[in-house]
Image (cartoon, rainbow, N blue to C red; front, side, top):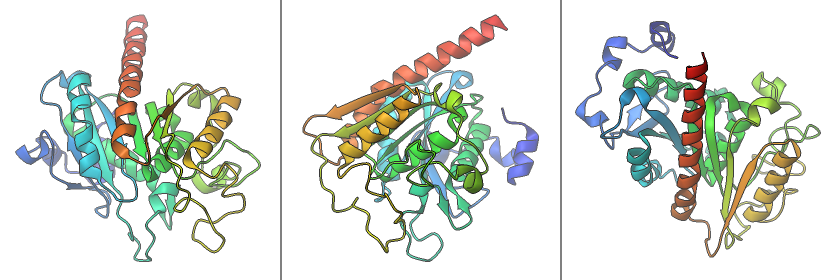
Length: 296
């Protein structure tokens, strides 16, 4: 998947990329993205397992940006599944204008957050010798905003996606503009919705049944991301996620919906519920790759 020309295109010195230091093993230090040091990430590198068979899972933080904590919550998953964990940091106020939410909506000024994640994945795969052309994606709260929108734009890159308790959702609605719908994604992102590719990706939607506070997620006119119809998907996170489920099912995209009893807006139980789903998705992905390899 990655060649020496990839290193040159991203401005990465191949000799530097070839030998991770002791600080870049296990639960790593925080590393700036070579192609855009405004953004950074940390990793968890499994201590065992065949490096040639290793996969990658990206865990996306919410508004509090507890990215190292979320990385640590997936250490057992990483060891059990021979899967490296990539936890990006998308800082707030990155353009100096007080915006804390840009990454959730994929666009902020000239920043394309889907491309930033792709650059991180490419850098990590080159540095650690990961050859898989797909990766897994999981996000909580603001990170779930990101996760399901990345899935809509770039499903061909994913072997599975888990969407945990987003405050707002983008529906596969051709009559609404971004971010509530997808009518103008070709103008904004230079790509069209690919229903066939979307249908190849296992999707989990997960939320607590006690996650009912609407104060933070109710959109109001005059705010930065206000658009007409911003609250139409429902008042609460469970309602909005159910609306997303119906939208995906209408387009024949298979969805697993999990409503966790007694759980509020908490990352730990959401991520715990995601791990079994992601493990199954990764196993299915690897089995599919093995079948393709044996038949070629």
